[in-house]
Length: 315
Ligand SMILES: NC(=O)c1ccc[n+]([C@@H]2O[C@H](COP(=O)([O-])OP(=O)(O)OC[C@H]3O[C@@H](n4cnc5c(N)ncnc54)[C@H](O)[C@@H]3O)[C@@H](O)[C@H]2O)c1
Image (cartoon, rainbow, N blue to C red):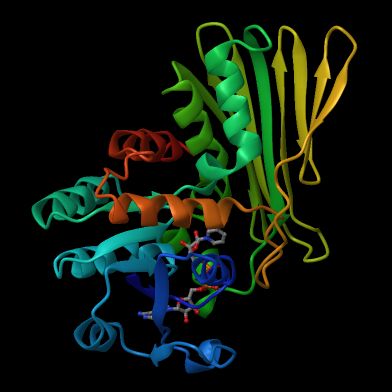
């Protein structure tokens, strides 16, 4: 049984903690947050407010990092230098140099490291990639991906609204879809960016060009907190249009059939309005199995993370 520690019991931990609880071959034994009240509702784990103390006292095989972005790589490096495998929330960092720093540390200490880019583990998104690769619906012609939410006001010390600590909409929202685009279709040949930003709102759009198709990705922080989070996509293939909205994927075949693709029966988790999916559990299970079977955790590759940061820098 692998032993797991988790640091950062904020918004996204509400998806990771239930994920670990469902694993049969791993046990979450300890959690850590500098705000002790964040851990009040958990009674099954040892609790720490000091990360170094958790590392000293616990013998863990895996650390799950759910900290604010600006702490990801420093905390990951510290744990990996103690021989601990690390799964870490996106984005790896705002700085491309950190990609090498993290992966070099993993290699030097013979441990596994993975950034949890959740769309790579999301069945409906994985299906789009497989359609592109197999040509099931003919050639891909275009795609539109969108991720729209309200300006985040829940984060610890308001770090999310600080450009130097979160990178704002590009590194908070756009990165999800852009990472998928780079994973599924490779690095784009060309990109065009637009941004409409005011103090309390931020909208960005990127068009990513490939030889025979283009993908548009839009991301928004709306000023009003009444605006409910929504994400989805539309991919236009020669023989079908794939549309994902309200956690449902519909395939509109050109020959007349309309098919519902339904594999996600996940529940919405946590307290920050995350969409319904089992993808968070899927990424945890994938990483756990890589550690158990000593397989490379290479579904997310360092070059792809670097490519994404280099594109996001242009916003
Ligand atoms: N994959 C997704 O869908 C998704 C969704 C939301 C957030 N995220 C990512 O998850 C990360 C965390 O985001 P969040 O919304 O949970 O933020 P958050 O501010 O709600 O949570 C971060 C937590 O870390 C704690 N913390 C801060 N400094 C600490 C320290 N030195 N030691 C221990 N604990 C410390 C805070 O007290 C807080 O509880 C971000 O990098 C974000 O990009 C991913």
